Image: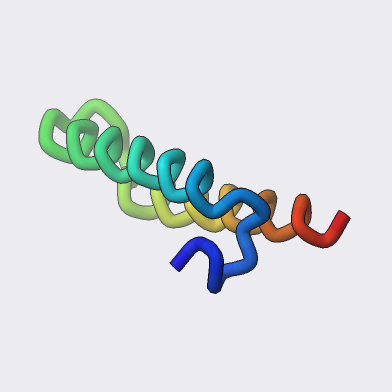
Length: 57
């Protein structure tokens, strides 16, 4: 999926997104971060955008 999304190094991007998902899950469970879902979507979008920009260079 990361390759289709245009990520420069798909394996690295997928690992980063996995860490984000797992961290968001824990944060949502313990309530330590407000708007965890919104923040997760924004952060994953930024990771994908950064990966696509690196590919274009």
